[in-house]
Length: 397
Ligand SMILES: Cc1ncc(COP(=O)(O)O)c(C=O)c1O
Image 1: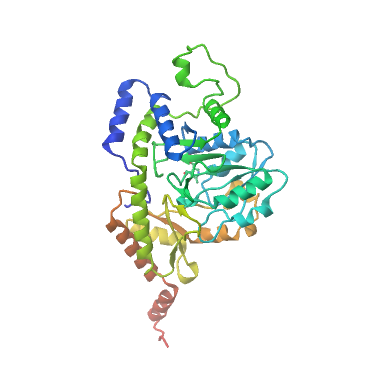
Image 2: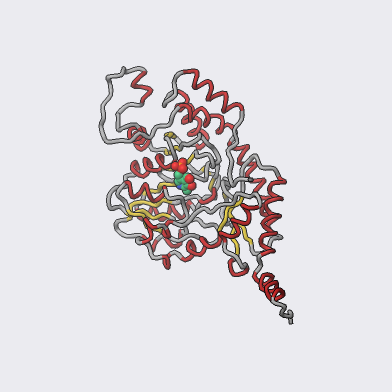
């Protein structure tokens, strides 16, 4: 089975994990510090704070941005559930705004109408690795004094008008889950230029203690710590960072390969009817190509999107759905009228994610497109109807 994603792991990661195990320092320590430094340097931000998962990093990001009980936060329904769940954990209210039909990123033209005096922040998601329209977001945020917390789980290595994603909003979160462009097994990080936000994130990720684990066992002595607020146990382990250090060193090379594969998909998909890749926005950007999402035309097919996925799976292709929009989930259903989100609601019937990961061969892309084309051809509505008529012995007059 060709999965939709697979991590690229080399001997460098394996050796570093072994060295970490042999060092005896497995929890947050020197490797996490190095990973954070190198990540901040790659992003061009003053700070990167590593966490146990992307969800943990996003929870921290939301809290340090000052989002709290009763605050409304404008976000997208086309995302993984973490994006909205962490808002609920902070006591805040996710307000879903519809997405653009061709990119599935937050439609910045629809944000104004969702703002109220209680709106505190914007929480965009760079869907599939494509940067959102940051200038439009910044303009709204400045005019309305809103914070921008970015969910860049998919967008490590992406940039907007030459600026790396990670240094544009007030605070940005990344995920290092195994499907992502950089993995640490599980893991995540936030980036920010704000010293105070970074310091609070470090404190909150480790119980609300006013010192890092390293300094507690290093310079100042084990008794010199104070719990100043109720934090979490969200710190990254050095075992995770050991993987991350070497993943980061190859990030650009791997993202280039993702791009090559994506361009091959786009080229080959031109000849497949009723299947359309997502489109590029007009502003200058660099896509991280985390996922390759296409849309089928349900009206042209005799089967549903889920059946297409089943057909692909039965022929060795692990296609997926990213995502079931949040306003259609039981937890969020009562909070939003689906009629207010027609694009996301419609996209849900149409999208599927095809395999894309750096170790894929060109031939794998050719295979996926060929199989997809076959599945589409076999299930075109007109053809299926004609065959049914033929079986009933009716003439094709
Ligand atoms: C858009 C988005 N946000 C947040 C997350 C959460 O990241 P993690 O799985 O590392 O907790 C993910 C990961 O799947 C994601 O796709």
